[in-house]
Length: 169
Image (cartoon, rainbow, N blue to C red; front, top):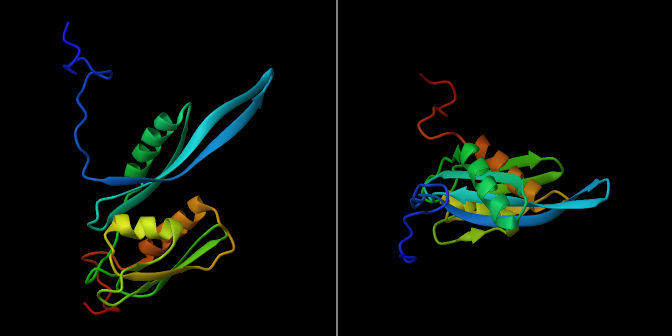
């Protein structure tokens, strides 16, 4: 029996290479109290992006960390947004808010780089933005809420191909 050949893989299909890069933002152990003790599960927060303007944040739970990461990645693919990028930066200042997290994003000149911390850096880097300045204004240190506030800010940008001309037809 040839064990080197991976022909009989679980699930029956070969896994193809995804065009998205992924980054695990957070893994938490969550507990459910039941009769006779506690049940532990893991919650994963994953950010995916293609470095060409598409980015998404996903969250899901599973019995172990690898299962929760796979489920969160599938969830992130369902929640993809398209970001408007001009000259490797964003077109204008924007503020995003989610829960108690508030994130300010500002365009930066060529060569400035990504001046952002934590979850904001991960989201904008995977979106393909290479020059940006940001500041987390909210009082929260919750990575999930800060990532979702960044997504809300990027949603507010004028979309690709959209008319942001102020009413001209």
